[in-house]
Image 1: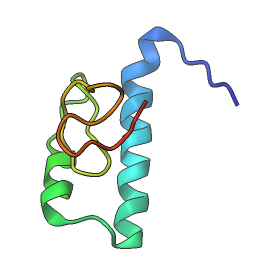
Image 2: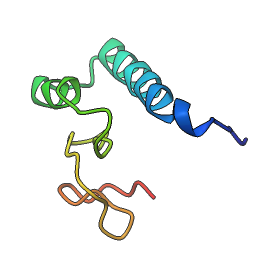
Image 3: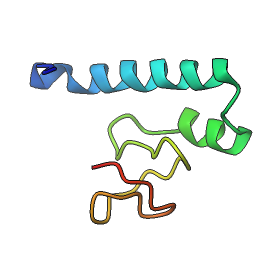
Image 4: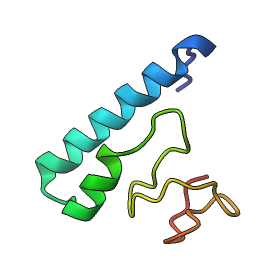
Amino acid sequence: MELLVQEQDVPQFARMMRDDWVRSVQQEGTINTDLDAKLAAHDPDGEPPCPACGTAAPLVDDCCSDCGLYLG
């Protein structure tokens, strides 16, 4: 599958995808309150948060710099 998004629509699309992911995780009941707070406070123009720990930092070797989850 390939998804093409115009450059000016990337921030809005990223927010939409993040919000959809957060809703899904909350419905499953698998999100903890610390992670929920980190995701809610995320700056949509900054680094995307890790879905496992919520850290919003550049990847290290395609992995979260905090918990090591492979995201590449």
